Length: 254
Ligand code: SAM
Image 1: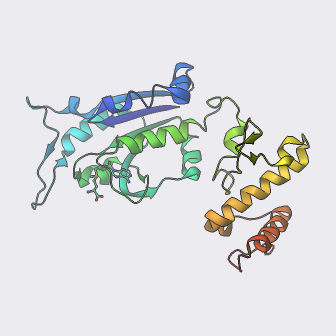
Image 2 (image 1 turned 135 degrees about the vertical axis):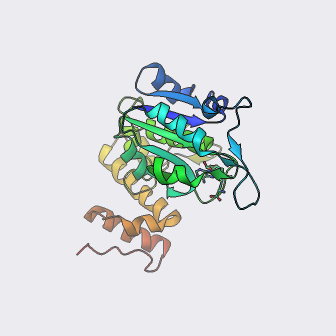
């Protein structure tokens, strides 16, 4: 998969996209990223990329001529989708990450300052993605968030493919708790079942704990998920244990 990122601050990407799992995936050719400096597409001698908003008001607006020159140069004749990172976009989540991971190439446009010119949005942007209901100074961190979340879903990027399968949100539940050595730490013991070597008991324990986490922290996720018979049984036990009253419907789907 290939990402083209358009930004006014290419240097911001150096660290996060060069180290650890993403850096290794790039070295192994599982993922490629090109960073394009929007300023290189400014044509006047001062390389101006922004201007004051028509109608007045605070902040600077990124000029449409510069942005479109950059987008068209990077996209060429391809139909590669252009994603504008914006707090006004659809809120990015694991489902969207999985959808984007099926695409061969994406162009990510990072805004900055007050906004980009609306005409770019209307005609050159295919989708807008937000990374949450808060406002950042620029689209660089959001672009890195999208690349990271998408890249770890690409085949071969994670050492063990199965590890992303149990991640939070991947199957509509939060992940179960994890433990490692030492088995006893400051009088806190690892749950015995995890030391038993009994695969079926471990699987059921983990499923119940994933359901417990989700029930206590994100009951909204359970409401959207179709539960198996086993999950419904475990959830009923959990509702009793935590005396959660009627918050989650454990009935079979119609
Ligand atoms: N005036 C804009 C608004 O209220 O919608 C916010 C502009 S923000 C200061 C500058 C840039 O940061 C945006 O153009 C966008 O690229 C990026 N940005 C800020 N918050 C973001 C978020 N939550 N998700 C994605 N991009 C964001």
